[in-house]
Image (cartoon, rainbow, N blue to C red; front, side, top):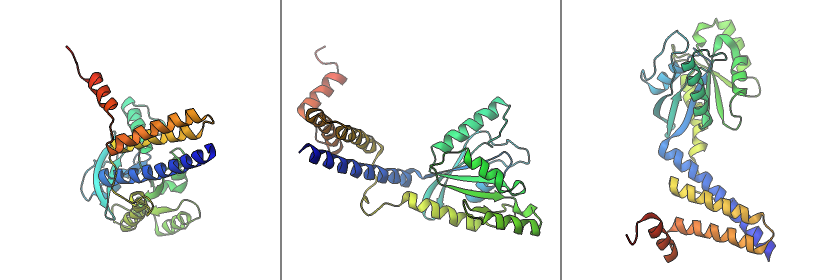
Length: 270
């Protein structure tokens, strides 16, 4: 009987994980898929940011380190909402305290993103971009883009294009000045964004709120704890906690819960 209960609890945990994953998709539909523009200083990130925004949203300057803080913009990419963030250049040796803080914020924003858009200067080649990619969270999908391709001679551009098509992480060539490759970049972004917002048939439904997601997380933790114990009474206690959390989710509140809330949150008898 205990093995059957544990098996059912494990199945429930998988269903809760699937629902929570779908809830993250719902959050993306509400707030937008978070895309971080990252690269070394003066790689042309802000130029790409402005081209994607179709307006001068970020300051562009030949001087490296112009962007110090996160500049955000809400976009529509392939019919899905996107929250695009232009970040400070990831300098290897940032000496200025403000620049160091900008780099730290860029990495923090990237870690909380859904997709990374890595931008490099085509004159520095693919290798630098791959090295930068290796320093970022490995669990996040990414697109590699080499900007300023209009500055290369045709022969050098053809050689670089062959390198970018090599197996592994593909890399795109664009020029914000001429518009070359921008349409292809937007299509590539749309292909990356779509699965982050789409729901599977098994879990498709209405997006869940932040509160519902938090309660489901509590419920999942209790169910997972239940599967780890051999003693029936301990397993039952964790399953009871999971049931209480589900009750909060669907609105089943007992009289004891109501009294506890009243005596905890209100000054009674004074």
